[in-house]
Amino acid sequence: MGRFVLEKCEVVYRLEGVDPDEGVNVYDLVPYLEQFDDLVRETLKQSGYSGDVSVKIRPFKEGSFITEFVINGRFIDLLSGNQATAIANALGILGFFGVTSKSIPRVVKSVRGKINDFRKNEDGTFTYGSGTESVTVDETTHRVIQSPKVANLYGHVAVGPLRKFDGAVQRVDIYGRDKDADDDGLSDGASFTADDSKNYSIYANDAELAAEADFTENIFVNHGVWLRPLSGSYGGEEKGYTFSFGEGDSSAKYSHVAIDDDAFRKRLETGDIRLNASDLMCVDLEITQRVRRDGKTKTSYRIIHVTDYKSFGRQAKLDI
Image (cartoon, rainbow, N blue to C red; front, side):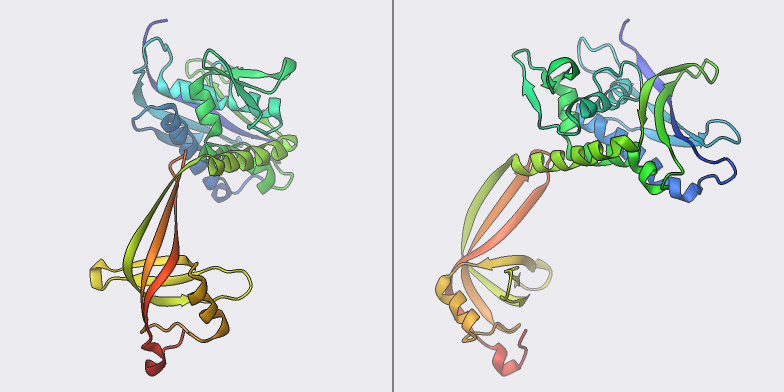
């Protein structure tokens, strides 16, 4: 096959076991339609492709409880040697279209959701699990599998209706359909039952834990920073204080600030000092930024030394 452009792909999202006399409230299905859209977009992003994708929803056939997703858009493959289009690749990784033997559902099944059970091979591929159930995937598929956002969305799309409708849905089928064939002209796809629910919960949790553990950390200290206390207290589990910095439009707020100046904190704990909204503190402020591999950033603040403290709050009676 030569390089080609996929302009439209039809994917069927089927809820099996629904009583035709009871049906499913269309408004209850909306979250899964939106999450399917988000899942495809995030998979494309993690695969390294750019471009718009629009997911349009219409009934598969009148009177059925099947929803058909028609994915429109032009996705030109920019990777040399890769004969699939971006959208077909993404749906293949998800296990919904084309060759699905090395897809997310196959991997999740092989490791029972524990996606930290993998090894990197010398050729750059990754093998999940061991023995006859092991699955070897390329680097792009591995990156998608490890994405906590993909993992979370996948669980909602694949087994969410099984949980939501409390037995009314017996199975969720997601598969591609040949638009030029009849209703039986189907490609490989994926099916999910209640037995899969636990695996996808483990999958989402493991992906999140892996992302939390894989980060870069940057630490820097600002000296002589004047802060004004807004709220906070010490008692039980320390949650830190909230301070404001600057005035007017240029002001900023620092939340969950730890005070690690032992002498100053002791005065707080004994009640010798009670921070008030009119007070001013000159401090050395340590700022720590953690950037996870999925791009999420967490910033924490720590006062390592209080160089000056001006108490105006007691006179103003603005004790916080």
